Image (cartoon, rainbow, N blue to C red):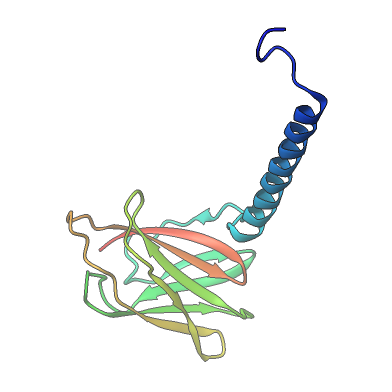
Length: 150
């Protein structure tokens, strides 16, 4: 009998046992990743707002929204993000540059009065000199992406 041509029954049982154990571990890892990683099925709507210092009007999930920056956005210069939307419960704003890690830039907007929300924002400076930002507004779980230049 040649070496390696036949496995004994005990060897096959061990291999099947290890294969089953590895399969179970992979299934458990996949389940955990499903719960941990974000998987938003809704694609954010894209909104055109060439100058966010002027009033921008659009709708998210049928709700009229008005957006305005208190000043022209610029790296390391604070400004206030003002939003008017009725019947909102929770609003977040995040700022990114596509294909560029700009760190964590997420702000929770706070209600100022009925339908008026705001957050004080400070954008970082991009070491490459880029100024093309994308504001992602999340209003009660619905998202809109608003590209702008600082």
